Each structure stands twice: as structure tokens, then as C-alpha cells.
Image (cartoon, rainbow, N blue to C red; front, side, top):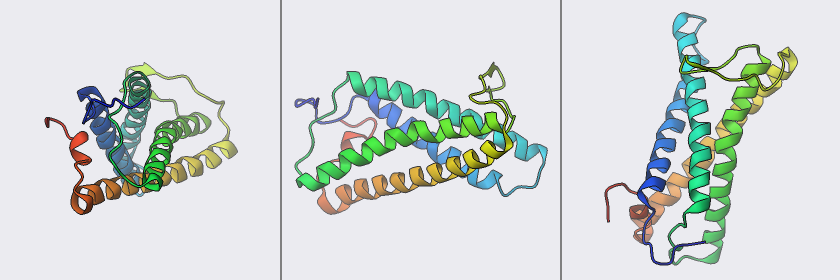
Length: 180
């Protein structure tokens, strides 16, 4: 349902895009850093921050999806059909991973017996009972899904930069804040 009259995304869609981008990059960076630390209070704090970021990403993703389903995107820019198809599938994959990565992390945390208390205030229910073998499997799944998300994000950024600097078609301006 493209909005044929719009040349850019609305401010709420732009805010969701950039908030999620920052949260995902931050959570990924902290995730990479924290796993290499020795057991300490600093490592435990980073694990909690990572979990809070993951639950925030999950909530923002749900809100973003609801917004997207109820608000039309601008019409596609002229591009070969294969590029438009790749872009559609990449966006679908991004949305799947926006949910799959934090849900796998939440389930892993539950299976490992470590509850999530969002921002230290809201205890979230365990998704599964503690199970060491399941936790190990989910740990790997969470890791590989996160790497998959990182790869799709890198491809997304590369495509946006290609549109900006090679095609010069104005695609990036549609998602930049404060531009008209």
C-alpha cells in the first residue's frame, strides 16, 4: 500500500527506523564485548543492559510493525524490478530478525535460569523452564540470528549508500530526519 503522494516516510516511521538502528547497533556491540569479559560485576551489568536493550528492541519492533501496517510507505523509486524485489525481501527479513533475535535471547535467558527484569523494574515471564541443554542450543541460535541480522543490516546500509553516492536518486533523503 504505497502512498503515491508521499516522497518520504512520515516522522514516526523515521523515528522508529533510527531508534531501532541505534538500539540494534548498541546491543550488538555490547553483546560482542560482554562475552569476552571475565566473570565480574561489570559483565553482569552489561548482560542486564543487553537484555534490556533486547526487550526494548522487541517492543519497538512491535510498535514499528503496527505503525507500518497502518501507515503507507512512499512509492518505490524507479529501479529495476529485481532491485525492488531484493529490497522487499531484505526488509521482510529485517522484520523477522527484529523479532527472532530478542525472542531467542529471552528464551535462552529463561532456559539458562536467568530471569529478565526489564530496566530492573518489570519482571518478564520465563518463556521456558530452566534446561541446560536447551540453553546451550538457544545460546548458539541467538548468536547466529544476531550475526544474520548484522549481515542484513550491513547489506541494507551498503544499498542505501549505493543509492546515495552512485545512483544519486534521493532514496536516503526519504528516511533522514528533519528533511523535507
